[in-house]
Length: 220
Image (cartoon, rainbow, N blue to C red; front, side, top):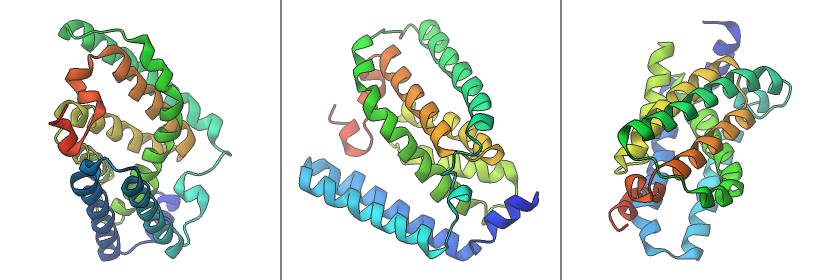
C-alpha cells in the first residue's frame, strides 16, 4: 500500500465507515423504494436535498481534502488518457454485444439527453468514489476486494434492473480501479455519461427498462 492510500484510509475508522455507508444506502433505498413511486416533484426535490445535505455533512465531518475526493484538475490530463481508453474499449464492447445479441437498436434521438448525463455522470461518480469507495478502503484491506465491494454495492442500488446491474458492476469495477490510479471525478463522470448515453442509444428501451430502478422497473 502506498503512502497516499494510507492517508486516505486514515480519515475513517472501520466502524465509522461502515455506519456511514449504511446511513447513505438506507437514505437512497428509502427514496427509491418508498418515495420515488409517488412521482411527486416536491418530494423528489426534498429527498435529493436531504441526501445531498447528509453527504456534505459526512464529507465535511472528516475534513476530506478536495484532492482526496477526486475534485481536482491538476491530474486531469493524466487521468484523461486511461479513462478515455477504457471508455472507448467498453463502448466498443457494448456495440459488439448488442450486435451479437441481436439487440442493436440505434436511437439517435437519445443523444438529446446527453446534457442531463453530463451532469448526472459526475454526481454518480462522486457518490461511488468520494463517498463509497473511500470508505470501503477503510473496511477492506485487499485492493481488489474493496473495488469489488464498492462495485457490488453500486450495482445493487440499481436493483431489480438486472441488465443495468450487470453493466453497472463492470463499469464501477473499472472506474474504481481508475480512481485508485488517478482520482479525478470529472474524467470519470464524463466516462459515465458517455456509457449511459451509449446504453440508451444502442439498446431497445424495453431491455434496460429506460434505466429505471426500484418499483418503477416493474411498472414500465
